[in-house]
Amino acid sequence: MNSKDFVSIRDFSPSEIQDLLLLGRQIKAYPDVYSEALRGKTLAMVFEKPSLRTRVTFDVGIQQLGGFSLYLSPAEINLGKRESVYDVAKNLERMVQGIMIRTFAHTIVEQMAEYAGIPVINGLTDYSHPCQAMADFLTMLEVKGRLDELKVAFVGDGNNVAHSLMFAGAQLGAEVFVATPPGHEPQADAIAWASERARETGGSCRITNNAKEAVSAADVVYTDVWTSMGQEAEADKRLNAFRNYRVNSELFAYAKRDAIFMHCLPAHRGEEVTNDVIDSPRSVVFQQAENRLHVQKAIMLELMKDVPVGPVRPATVPELAHA
Ligand code: CP
Ligand code: NVA
Image (cartoon, rainbow, N blue to C red; front, side, top):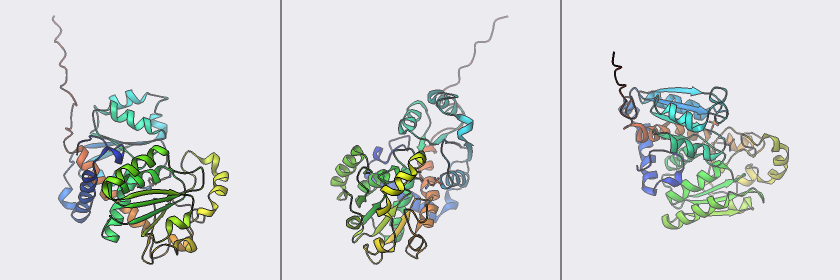
C-alpha cells in the first residue's frame, strides 16, 4: 500500500482496496496467526463525537494484534481549542505508532495526516466514513459472494456514510444507486469522483430522488440516520424532509427476493427503518458491525506494521556541558 494513512478510500487503487478486504477476510478466518503482528504498538484514539462500534472495534482490534490503545475523549484533547491540530500531531507521533481520529471537519483529519509522521486513520468525519464502507463491502462479499454487478441502493441522506459507500463501490466495480430527498444529495465532488472511477472498474454511481427507482431489483438496501452527529438542531426539519425515504417492508419489497438490508448503526428505529425490516432474517446489520473489527485489523496491520516503537527520528544527543 502506498499511502501511510487511511483518510479516504479515494487515496487507493482498486487493487489496494481489494487486497485490504481480502486481508480482512484472512484475519477473520485465522485471527491467531496475527495475534503478535503489532506487538507493543499503541494506537491513540481521538474522539470528538460519540461512538460504540468504532471505539470498541479499534480498541479490541489493536489488542488482538498484540498492541495497546489509548482512548482520548473530546474533553481531554479539545482539538483546535486547548491545543492546535499541529501540536497534537507532533506530540502523538513521538509517543504512539498510529492515530485513529473521529471528528467534524474532514480537513482536520487531512491536517493530522499531513503533520503526523505516523499513520492516521479516519474514524468518521462529516464528509466520510471509510472504515465503515470497508466493513460494508466485506459483508456484501461474504453474503453475496461477489461485488461486481451487485446493485447497492442507499436510501436517505447523501451523508458521510453514503459518500464512502459510493467511493468503495466505485473502486470495487459495484453499482451504487443513491436515493435522497431533493437538497440532500451527496456532494457534487463525491458524485464526480465515484462516477469517474466506476467507469474504469465497470461499476456505476447513480443519484435519484426516487427511492423506489433506486431499490428496484437491488441486491442490497442500505440506509443511515436522517440526522447525523452534529446536525441535531435540524432534527425536526429533517424528520419531515425524509419521511418518504423510510425503508419499510413496502419499499424493501421492490428489491430482489434475496436482497439484504444494511445499516451502519446506530439506527433510529421507526425513522429511517422499521423494525420489521431491521429485525428480519434478511438484515445483516450485526454481521456488518462485527466486520468493522476484522477489516480495521487489516487496515491497522498494513499501516502500522513498519512503524518502529521508539523515536520517530534519530534522537538528538545533547552536548555534554563542559565543566
Ligand atoms: N457505525 C459506527 O461508526 O458506529 P459508532 O458511531 O457507534 O462508532
Ligand atoms: N451518518 C452518521 C453515521 C454514524 C456512524 C453520523 O455521522 O452520525
